[in-house]
Length: 125
Image (cartoon, rainbow, N blue to C red):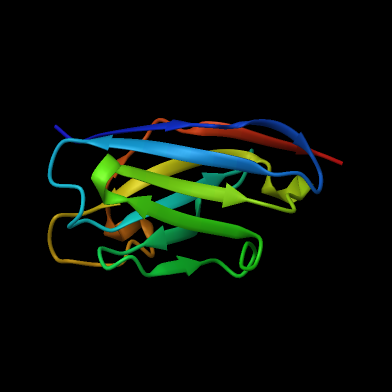
């Protein structure tokens, strides 16, 4: 059974940094793409970043240059380093893994097979 557990959320002032972690278990981790999504109150969940099985990272325009996603296949882990945080980054952040088939880059919810429970990030102005 695939499980994803996020950690590292919290409260920070604008301009600050946080690092989210996601621990994965279950099927072979290295063959799946992995991603971060977020959902702010009253808004739909949106894609933030993903890392495919070859280690190539993709970013939403809203976070490009501020966030860095990485994965450690030896530890079955995914990370999101968030710098220069803004109040509009406030949301629940979800770790996700891609569907087993077809192979994809985890660029949309349709690509996702598994979700974590989420971790809250609050950025105050």
